[in-house]
Image 1 (cartoon, helix red, strand yellow):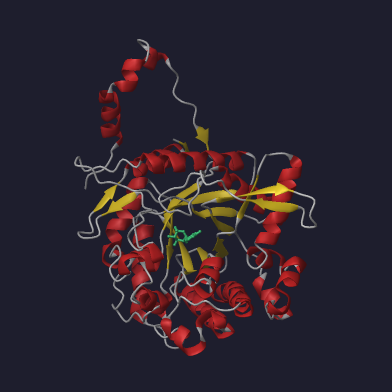
Image 2: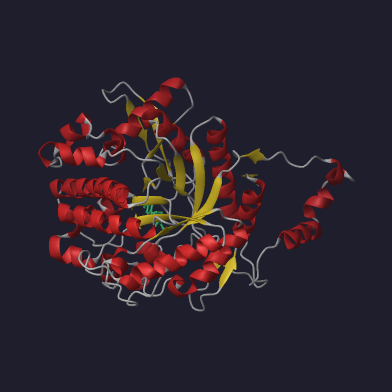
Length: 482
Ligand code: PNW
């Protein structure tokens, strides 16, 4: 496996000549080592992945189909008709992937479990071979000194539940999720100490049942969409309760949310206050409901007759206290103060605003600082993790066997600088999971968008750590922005 070792990188830089030649004589030996921006001791560095995006082996060992199998095999739904049938074949190559993590020096790894491997029909009798697979993966991580953080739902809903009850259109699916979550917690909590219920409520509700971009690809009317959102929140809440009831004492429970991050257009007290008002309102159907146990009046008024039907017991479950909150952070939304009753206005981006290879992935590194700060100040969570952050790049495997993804390194370095700012200001940020360990199946974009710090040749399954892997390894080793 070709990769950037520290030595080869140093040799390369020394031989590179350009920078060295431009420096005055002896300048390099006299100049002090760059001051690194240090993270708190014990900061947890890792990577994240998701089952359908990396595993493949979709018909193996009794796995039932998920909505993503059906959707990706429906003509016209994904880029190039790409499916997750093989993906990174991590189902068979997980040991190699654990070694990639080990070589990075990762302390933690966020993986997700495929619900339909455990309950092929969504509910009913568990499939022993399904749970046995995750036991093997978790054991291999632990043997290599890596602490597993497990996400229970990263969008691969059993197709059987879609067929039987309409998937997230029914609260039966929320209840089925709680059963599944409790079962997995019971089986794994002797060795897994951190569970996430759901990943990104908006993606498996709005993107999947409102705009139809993701499985199952529906475009429902607003009242039904609001109910789908409510059932997603309810699954999270019932899941928290089920995990607590089934797991060993001390098991930590949280969720991974991509709340909209409201960045103040300038950092002055009135603009910061506007961004925090916006944080509550814009996330009203999701994170605000989870943290506050009620939908905001503004949301209910706006939706009117289409507002979700809810009971007090459901809202109580939805707001079950969490041990930690995970934030998936990608792209900023800019907010300014104004005189409207809401007290804020969203600011649209000029056409020239830069983005990464995915056209939605606008680059504003301060997004990660404001994600942590807004959520901390508005809701005071006990602990926070960045559960995803990273980017797509048009990576090229060069003739010398390397991938020089300097744009990804730029993206990561600037985001980590802003995360370090939040850490030194004392916000309770405990760890960072880079998305992603591997190039993988990027949902409706298929294999056309690469988010990995490891290049994957999807024909041969050969893994090649990119320049960004070398950058991340240095960051982890020095516990500082490298
Ligand atoms: C997250 N958007 O999804 C997911 O959790 C990952 O599975 C995914 O691969 C990663 O981010 C990169 O996309 C998102 O359109 C998908 O704004 C789409 C959007 C945001 C996040």
